[in-house]
Image (cartoon, rainbow, N blue to C red):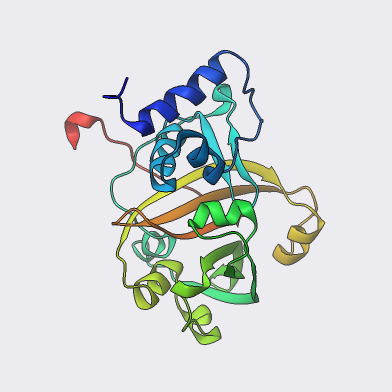
Length: 242
């Protein structure tokens, strides 16, 4: 048993609980610090186990809410090589994204956000919310949260001009390594409908994600909401073609 890596023990534990029906679809998992305490290991090891479960579609992370058991019947996973920003993708089609800042604030990190950013609960975090526009038409809204210590020099001018990837490259010395993300179909509530100038109940594509450095430390957590006429395009290759 000692030869089995701790991250594998954690992964096996939650998979067995899901198979036994102890953890059912939609149920919330314990916070990462609680899991680390239970297995007497580091949060980095827990995050490694959770990342594997996310990749397999067994669990999903929801920004500001926690980690939940996925409904595998409604989940599909794909592995993407290379971390490309939304703005970089559009630029390849000759389009440019602009921004309209809605809010920028500091607050104490909840236990869920502290877990996601690997910081202490109650530490100061910075959150901004802004609209994304293409050809002066609103196509979505993004919400990003950082540990304040990583973005102390962030300005309103930065948020008016730069993509999240550019902000990270400009403000944080750690190079981007990987992204964990999930996509979900949702409908616009009253607040989101007002911000996006769409009807309440209109369909939206919601993307939750977390950005890590090449040293595997969390850099940012966020979510984005996309409305018509946004289209998600991707190309999948077989392993033999890579």
